[in-house]
Image: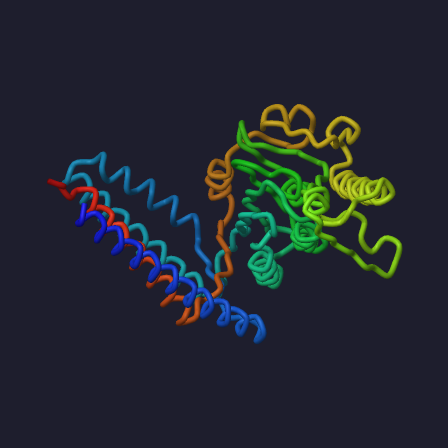
Amino acid sequence: MEFLTEFGLFIAKTVTLVVALLVIVSVIMSTAQKDKDDHGGDGELRVRKLNEKYRKLRESLQARLRSESERKAFEKARKKAEKAKEKAAKAKRKSGEGAEEEKPKVYVLDFDGDIKASDTDSLRRSITAVLSVAEPETDEVVIRLESGGGLVHSYGLAAAQLDRIRAKGIKLTACVDKVAASGGYMMACVADRIVASPFAILGSIGVVAQLPNFHRFLKKNDVDFEVLTAGEHKRTLTIFGENTDKGRAKFLEDLEDTHLLFKEYVGERRPGLDLAAVANGDIWFGRRALEVNLIDEIKTSDEFLIEACDRADVISVSYQRKRTLPEKLGLATSAALEHTVWRVLGAFRNQKIQ
């Protein structure tokens, strides 16, 4: 028992130290992030040619299926073909015939949405970069989209960023592998074409708001809570104050108006939709979504991009914010502390008590 008591105290001290260090790290990271935001932030644009990725996957499998001698012969032939192609291109340029005709480009962007659509800033920067080089007549943008929706104003801004692509006359395709619902579908409907996997979740064209109310609890315990406003509709429903039928009616009116704006936005971008049938907050899985015209084709994003590689240079573009030194130290410290705690707990679990 004495060992258990001492070990329990050790664990308590360790946990306390871990929590204290995490709080300090969080403060440092928050300060660093605020300073970064105040000065415009810093990051880098990452560009990757997906044709090469899929080619290497194919060649890796082909190599494993061949014998050692066949693999060597194949690699020798491939290098010889690449050299011959490069030599022919040089000769063509030298003779004044000019460079060979460039393939059209498909720019691939990613958006992984949370309730605040936090990925919007990275998306905005990536779109700005792509629009500076994309050709309206030949190039295309693909957005791989995953989101169950969130705040109206946040997803409204994210969708407006995609509208910039359409405004430039560049074809936009949205690929949905898992979910594009509510605010996620608001973004997807901007695309000229929506492609989704068979069981992707789509739709949820509706608006929801919910909040608890503690007024009766406070009243029961003789606690007064006052809300002072200037303006009839400055505050309609509150968490702690007494809500009125008039306030509820105004709040519901605002929800209905937001829903109307949502439906109008979707209807303008997908005029073939029967909004009366689909804009009721319901969801549809991929194949059912195709039947009601929420999407245009059943296909995974991998399938779509592999096919695109045959006709174009497929290029992944993403903006990655650089982490500051305090952030890197914070992540390293958190990982080290977590590792230590799990080792201590593991040692305790394996300890034999006599």
